[in-house]
Structure formats: structure tokens, C-alpha cells
Image (cartoon, rainbow, N blue to C red; front, side, top):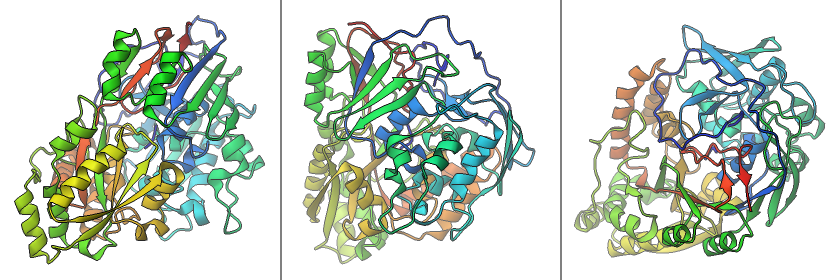
Length: 556
């Protein structure tokens, strides 16, 4: 979902995915405010995105294109080390949990300012936490505040108060966040762009959370579209909707200033057009390289970087459909899908079929869960047993977009549609433009009546099982539409265990529980790639897409 830095990241060698173990009680920064000795230069870096961002307020986003840009403008308390999923200090230089696992005291970096000139300090940290907790109205909607909803589990004025309790600024360089219950993955979660630190001054000045009136959507406020204000190495210059976003170097950045003066993100939805734009020199790089394009690009002297697969592509099922409330029907759909054929016919080389809703590199993975290997006869028999031999399903899929976990959704849809029809299931296609139409259809209350099954996925934001199955199945949601109180309670209990050692066996049991319940079909872990012109240096591909461009240089 989710998508540093400095010195905020000096050049790093692309690393393999590194597993995070138990949460560090204290992490000292290995970086210094002076940064590297290299001076900021000029020129620009032009990168192609597959779709427009939704807005520039990362707290109100869940899409990768918003986060790609947010990572240039904003920073969080912590980040991931380049090329890995390991924790790295950022705006916080160290952190210390309390003995009961409910409070975390962050020591903050001195001398940091937001790009509007206001101070980043303990009060600013608390203002951000209080902003999220005090959201009302549409801001509490799952499709608006997706991450806070799923991770903090509620709001001050919501049906449930969630797990956030309070934040206290001990001084300008200290903030203590207190939770109502332990959460072993709390610090890892703070690497998410959704929890970036934003200027309280700018949020207030541009009325970022004004939700008065039925038509008001804070994702499209003046703040979120014109005045996003963070502490990162770039600032927003202008947004030409449907065309490009232009970022300028933050000349007052506290860390290593960007080596290019301008970063431009051009929207090119067609994969072939992105490849042609790189070949012609219109762009310097792009994400989600098609498998057929990799060898020709390499042979022509272009660079290919493979991002370690840390994702899941799945077929979701909407249990608002009465037929899908029968586990036999959900299991029949699972048996009807030939995952190997899905991988072969619609996903890049290196992709692997999935058994559960998380990659095998995440602690808590269980290789012994119920395996719904392709079995057409069993699928038909289960449908017969459930008296659903004439089942018709509305199958939703996005168009005009490529995601790291879903590089070619139209192709994936076509393969799965054919497989379901072989099992006797009639399929009604429901196509929609990715943002905001498709995401709203999948995540908003009004979308539940428009689809029965759908394609979606997730790129892990940090190495924690709760970031996968907790986000998907931790509470009732518009996407899945089921009320499984036992599963919700079990996920809550696992999440609140104070250590990873205690959590791992419980998450293994949870993966088995989810597989038996079959809320959807985990399809594959696609292998995403990026392509760059020969003169691009300093770009480090991240398994969690935590890629910041201040160290990128371009020689033409």
C-alpha cells in the first residue's frame, strides 16, 4: 500500500530483503547532520508513474503513486534501511519502549524544520498523532484513512476508541506515544508514509481536515493538492493532473540535499508507452517493467533493477453476496483457480504462486496450511453440495494501471475468468479506472453492491505479519464484508503480544485459520522490476518501495 534518506541515504548497494526480528528497544542513528561531502547539483530526474496520485496528504492515502511522491516530500520518525526492511532512524534518532510495551519514547533529531520554516519538535509529533486520533466524519472512512483505520483500530469519536491513548512532548527533542494495549510492530509501522510528520502550521493554515458539507473530501483539499508540507528533500512545485507532478529541491533540507534540482513524475498509464518513453529519452526511469521488455532493454544498454518481491496478489470475495457466505463456495472458487497458469500467463518471470496472504519471508508464515491445489472436479462438487451450480459472480478488475503486485490486471482477469467458467461459474466483468473509481468500489461502503469478487493486492510496508493479515482481516471491512469474531479476536490477541518470539507461533496458527476460512484466494507474489537510462545512478530499489531520490544523479 504504503510506499530514506540522507545522508538520508548515502549510496547503498542493493541488498536482499532483511528480516526484522524483535523490535529494537533503542536504535542509535549512524548518520550525522552534515551529510555527505557531495554538493547539490542541478538538472532533473524524470520518472514515469503508471497512474496519477490520489492526493499529496499521505495520511489520507493508501495507493503507491501517492506514497511514491509523499516519500520525497515527507519523512517519518523512522525509515527502512536502503534495499531492506530493517529499521533505520530518521526524524527520531532513537526510541525506547516501556516495560509493558504500551509506551514509546522517541528522541528527536535537533534543528529540523518543515519546508514552511516551522519547527519539527515534540509538539509537532504529538500534533500529528492527535490529528489522526481526532478525525471525524468522512475522515474515518476506510477508503480515506485506510492505514490509521486498520492499524490503530478506531478514533476518539468513533464506534471504538482504538488503541491510541496519548502523546506527550517531554521537550523539543522528545515525544512519548502511549497506547492502550501492547503492539510489537508499532515502531515498524511508523515507517509508513501514512504516518509521516506533517507541518501542524500548514495543516491549520490550509484547513486540511475540513469535512463540513456532504461534498467535502479532505483528500482533495487545498492542502492535499497544493500545499503539502513536510521535512523531506523535495517540495511540491506543481501538479498538472493526468500529466505530471513537478518537485523542486528543498534548499533548506536538514540532511543531504537532493543532487538534482527537479524531480518530475510523469503519468504514462500504458506499459508499452513507458518503455518507448525510456528508449526515446523522454524519461529516465520507470517502475513495473513488463517481462517481455527486460531483455531488449538490457541488450540496448538500459539498467534493470529487480525489487525483491514482498507482496501478495489476491482474489477478494465480498461476503455481502449471500452465496459467498457459504465456505464451500469460497473453497470451490479456490480449487477452480490454477495459480501456476495465472503466474505463467499474466505475471513477470520470477513470480511465484502464493499459498497464503503473506510472503514466506515474513515471520509467522506457515507452509502447512490447507493447500487449495487446482482441482476442477472438487470445485464443481463443492458448488453442487452448496446448491450453487448456476452461480453468477460480478468480477471487478482495474484498467489502465500497473501495480507491483498486479502488473497486468486485464491479463490476470482474463486468465481467472476462463478458469472460473470451466468450473461452471458465470462471470460478469466489472471494469473500472484505478483511482479513485476502482479503489472506492472495493473499499467504500457504496462499492459493496457493485462487485462480488475482485482483484487486489498489497506490497508489504514493513516486515510484520500484522501488516499483511492484520490489515486484511483484523476487523470487519467494506472490502471483505464478513463478520468473523473469532478471527478478529485471534488477530487482536496476536498483535498485542509484547514480543515477536511470542507472536510467531500464534501467527502460524492464524494463517492456518485463515486458509480454512478461505475469505479470498492468495494468487501469487509477483516480481516487480524497474528500468533506468544508462546515466542514472544512486537509485536503490526497496522491497517496501521506500525509495527517496535525493541521491539520484542523471548523466545524459
